[in-house]
Every structure is written in C-alpha cells, then in structure tokens.
Amino acid sequence: MIDKRLFALPGMRRYVIILGVLVFFQAVAIIVQARYLSIAIVGLWNLQSFKAIVGPTIIFMIAFLCRHLLTVWQNRVFFPYVEKTSGQIREKLMAKIFRLGPAEIEKRGTGNIVTMALEGIDKVQTYLMLVIIKVLDMSITPWLVLLYILFLRWEQAIFLFIIFPVIILFMIILGYAAQAKADRQYEGYQRLSNHFVDTLRGLSTLKQLGLSKRYADNVYEVSESYRKETMSTLKIALTSTFALDFFTTLSIAVVAVFLGFDLLDGKVTLLPALTILVLAPEYFMPIRNFANDYHATLNGKNALTAVLDVLNEPEMKQRDELPSFKWDNQSQLVLSHVSLTYPESKQPALKNISINIQGMKKIGIIGASGSGKSTLVNLIGGFLSPDQPDQVAINGQKLPHLNQEAWQQNFLYIPQNPYLFHATLAQNIAFYVDHATSESIRNAAERAGLTKWIKSLPAGLETMIGEGARSVSGGQAQRIALARAFLDTDRKILLFDEPTAHLDIETEAALKKDILPVFDNHLVFFATHRLHWIGEMDYVLVMDHGRLVEQGTPQELANQNGDYVKLRSEMEASDL
Image (cartoon, rainbow, N blue to C red; front, side, top):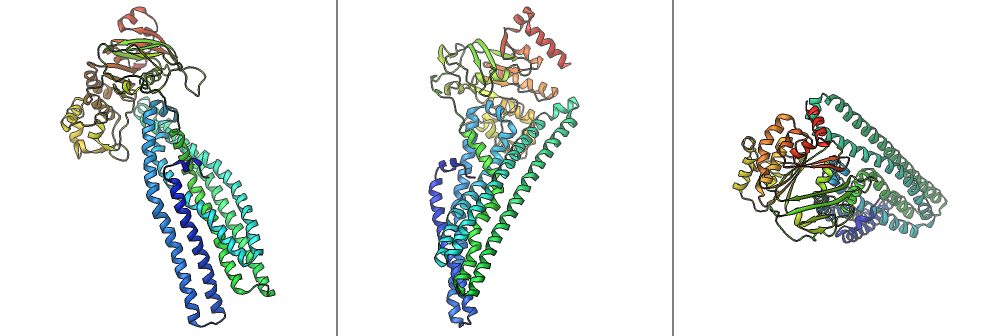
C-alpha cells in the first residue's frame, strides 16, 4: 500500500515521527475516554450521587475533546507539508520532462503526461494526506488498546489479538484484487487521456477527411471501457467494505456475548466488562478507517508510482563536455555513421546517419510517416543519445551526445504542439528570455502575426493562457512559438518538427508568411511532409525507414531522379 520511496521525500521521516507522537497521544485519549465513560455509566447504574458522576463525566468530555482536537492537529500539521511537497513534485516532474525532451512525451503519450502533471499530482496529494495518518493510526492505536484490554481481562485480549490478523489476511486478499482492478482502471484512464488529447489535436484534419464521426465512436468505446473498469473496481471496494464491517461487527458481538456470560457467572464485574465493550469498536476503528480510504488512495498510489518512475528515469551524463559558444557562419555540426535504438526496441530507429552542416542553412528533413524525421530532430536537439559515443562533433570536438548545455543554449525547438504554460501571453512569449522588455515582446508578437488577436483579448499581452485558462488554437500556439524565436535573437539554430502538420491549408499558408522571415541568418532544421516547404530549403535530407537515403540541394536531388523525386511525386499525389 505504501510506496517505500515515500520516505525518501524531503522531510517525510520528520513528519512521520511528529504524526506518530500525535497518534500515540490520541490513542491514550481514546483509552481514557472509554475508561471514564464506563465509570460514569456504572455509577449511574449503581445509583451513585450526582457529584460522584460529574468528575468521570468531565474527564470523559476532556478526553473526547482532546481526541478530536488531535485529529485536527494532525491534519493542520501535515497538510502544509503535503501541499508543499506536491507542488515540488509537480515542479520536479515538469523540469524532468523538459530535460528528457519530446522523446519521453512520445514514449508515454501526451495525454498521459498532461494527466500525470495535473490530475495525477492532485491524486498524489490526496494519497499522501490519507495514507500516512491512516497507516500510523492502524500501527499504534489498536496495540495500545489491546494492551489495556489485556490488563483488564486476558481472555478477550487474546480473542481480539487472534481475530485481527484474520481480518488483515482477508483484506489483503481483497486488496490485491482491488489493486489489480485499480491498475487496469488507471491504464484505462491513461488510454482515455491519450485518445482524447490526440483526437482533439487532429479534429480539424479529421473533419476535412470526413472521419470525425468514426473517431467519436472510438472515443466513446474507450470511455465505455473506462466506465466498465471503474464499476468493476467499485464492486470490489463495496465487497471488501461489507466484508470488513461484517467481520468486525461479528467480533464485537462475540466479545459482548462472552462478557455477558461472565457477568452472569460473576467472573467479571461490570466496570471492566463495560470498558472492554466500549474499547472493542475502537480496536477495529483504525483498520476500518484505513479500508474505507484504501480504494480512494489506489489511484493516488498509481499516480505517485508513475510520477516517481518518470523522476527516476536516467538522464544523459557528460552534459558539460562542450564549451560555451555561439553558432555562426564558421560553426560546424557533423554526424558520423550515427545509429540510434530505443531502449524498448530491437531494431534501430536511425541507421548509419552521416551529415556535415556548416554555417547558416535551411535544411529540410522529409520522408513518409515513420521514416525517422522526428527521431533525427530529437537526436540533433540532444533529447536522444546515439548508440555509440563520439559519433557526433561540433566545431571539430567529438561528443558522446548532443545533450550539451552549450549546444542547447543555441537552439529553439518548435514542435507540432508547442507547450503553453499557465501564465500570461507575454510570459509565454518570453519563455527563452529572462529579462525581455514589454516593447521587445510586443515587437516579437507583431512579427509573428499576433497583433490582431492580442487586440481582441480582454487584457492583451497580460491575458492568462495555458492550463485552465484561455484556450488557444493550433495556429495561435504556433505563432506564440514563432514569437519566441523572434524575441530571442541570440539563438541561431531553429528545430522545427512538423510544426504545421495538424493545421488546415489556409492557416498554414497564413502562418508560412510569418515563419519564413525568421529563417534569415539561422541554421534551420525543418522536418515536414508538406511539399510546398521543400522549395524554401537550401539542403534536403531524405529519410526512409530510419536511413538517410539521399541528401543535397533540391536541384541536385531532382537531377538524380531517385528517392527524392519519388517522394515528391507521392507528396504531390497526397496533396491533391
């Protein structure tokens, strides 16, 4: 139930100790409460004077109040820590994903990453808040209560001690069944998220192709599958709750029956018998509370496991091999027989890639879907590492990979769906520039063709966009990414990974007019499957099944009448 990695969180052990002390005193308050309630009831039964009843009643009320105040105290002590830790986990997750790059998002799915970073962290917060206190309560309270019952009457203490592991065993069996169901439910939730996000992204294209209804049915089927998994999990949850209530109630009834017989036989007096009877439900209360919240925390545990798996993903080392530099007309990038294989794959995604690029050029990367265009862009961006070291070099210096701080300070990456932060439009544009002025941001936005849209916004550049704020269309998102490029004049390398793939022709044509000026005085890598971009390129790399089958200027490749010409013919046919 508890992921051991929880205790590696900063400050967690300290708070566990603090909560353990509070739970201990709460258990003492429960025993005092039961004892003096029993004394007051026995006093009433024996027709004692009012003064004799008042003292035990007051102590009972103080213990009762302390018990619940300690519960409030536990939550007030722990909640700020949980909230702070959840926020830190979210920040670490976003930073880790940023360092791992697009390859990690592609591997896990965009919808999954978005769900993990937003709703997943909220579920982690719920999980942390519930599970630690409940487990401590279950680990301390029953045993203090049992020790006190043992002091009063050993027969009932032994019975309660024996029945407790039986209930635990039964709950473990049901717990494993619930965990398996919850795992499938969480997988269904991730699948639903990925389907939904992917469908939204391609909605305009699906409408053009007349496939929107078919994909609506697909989303419905995935949603229905998730609903069935959820109901299946709830069945297990209800069954386990009923079973736990049945066993604990039956156990308390057995204790009550035997105490009644002993009272009739004169083997026990009323006060210890009543105290044991009052404490018996308290003995089972922690495990009942834990069981009630167990199913509520399963998704949180799964979310935490997924988050920690990402945080523990190995990162590339040797990131400071390349000294600081600025890309210029004399700079050179060389890939020598580079191959790249994904960890989960046996076949290389890139095979024997060799290129030599110098200075400022516009380089088109073309190929059919699955040819390796995005993988090559991710390799150049340093998000993926080649199979062998020293196959890449910058300015003559051989490097283990391109995930170098100095290299990444030189380029801007513009994917199909640029990430927009929950921040103002101005802050999103100034993502790569720490101290951008309002005037420079406004100029960059104007050059990116955003001026008309900004004037329509209620707060202009100060309008909140991104997660949970104003929605932004695909074309607007690309223009924001373009404005980032216009704003940061120090970065002379641009990586475009099919930036217009999901846009309609009209939007792409309008966007193209604003993209072309940013190409000037830059080294541009532009992966695309749209034919009209090829004519804007100085040099073209033709990819096919992970291989670089041809490279050269568009005119040189056209004269060779090879794969480039064949691919252009296919692209022309698809455009028609």
